[in-house]
Length: 255
Length: 364
Image 1 (cartoon, chains in turn brown, cyan):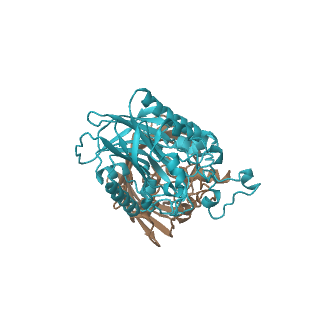
Image 2 (cartoon, rainbow over the protein chains, first blue to last red; image 1 turned 90 degrees about the vertical axis):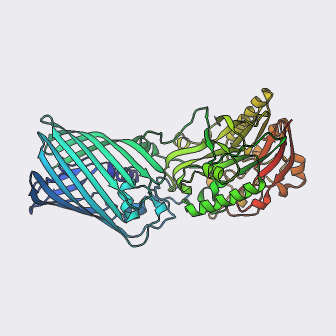
């Protein structure tokens, strides 16, 4: 059962909703902690920055976000993230510890491939303008670089929505991501989020992915909020183009 | 042949999460239209008095590479260059034999394991055929086992003449699997198409029957296949039919291949092993040895039983994995009229784990 829970957590890594301001240039208050069912642990630091850590230990990543000088009406921030996917990618070659043909259930990558030591570094600029009551707009753009100890076979891709674009940097060496988010509070406890992300994957067999998300947010307090909605994904994969509509859900806790 | 994918517990969770404009697994209607293909270049062919027909399980173009799913290999996702090389070998043999109608099994049209090459279109464009009709036996956005990923593989009829009214007939699903395994498992079919030879139309039927069922599913498949042929005959029409029936002839002298097919670490024919299952799935034919008798009684095979019985080894069509010593006959051609020149092409042993069988059909 523990393994099944791990699998569900892995699958859900990319399905996370927006955190309290995670895609905006607004940082968490100093000393504030947040964690979500499908989103990372985040903590506001006292030096005016924020750190977040993926709680899924097989896919460790750490991100640091800090403010930049305001540009006209835009609050600016940059964010840098370092991820180490090797353990997770090796794990999904045999999540239940079975061998090839037993069958090796849930294996998303064939065990015939060697997954090398890899890290990725992703940096992005974020600009945010407006206030939640009138509508808050955030725009971001960034570049990711994958550094592999040895070459990762192009045949070892996971040709599924959400996963394919997020792992592409390890196959192609580079990822460009552009996105935006519109957040608006409509009632005291209700707000909504419209979000989009465009992944450009130069050199990949699938060259782009577009993800659009719509979420309703119910905030009980500063300690808990519930997000639910959809995620529409249209992208190119090694077999061609395909669109998917997925449910999106998150429970987030802050203190 | 694809190994049984035994229990896929909890996969349904993923299936529910991952919905899209197309289903996770295509479950197919009982009868539905086949997928039609045409070559990039069409060369018109007129009516003929005889038609050369060939059947071939092409093992999705990977020749004798050690694919994990049908032998003892450890390969899953083959290199595109390996698949193209395999397809080139097939195309060369096909052009050399120059059949007018080709019944192919295990044709991948969009599978990760074979580099997503549309092999139906590739073969049309690299041989002298003009038209194709395809029926998938396994179509899934993802198979969550062994890293197989996306799969679309099935049966294909290639023809020099136009194919009309091509239909996919669903064969019964295996009765020895749990519901979840059955959902993600192969859905075998027979494909029937009318070959529009000018002035002399006839039917072509192609099938690939279950390999690993341990119950009477194969008997049901044979019955369904025969019922399709009976229907054509009842109309007063003519047919050529064939495929990989995964069954040995009723007069085969050897019925037990468990030890030949045994992989490293496996053990059969010992009491008490595998919870009492002492035979390898798909390798023990004794209980089903008479199942093809009805077809032999009703229709004309390209290789008659007496011809087969007189020289069995010369008519073997299959050996698993990278074993080049053919050891059983699983592939057949049938008609409700007459064949001449029935040939088992054992010179093609390196091109697939099955070899082609061809014959010339004499049009009444």
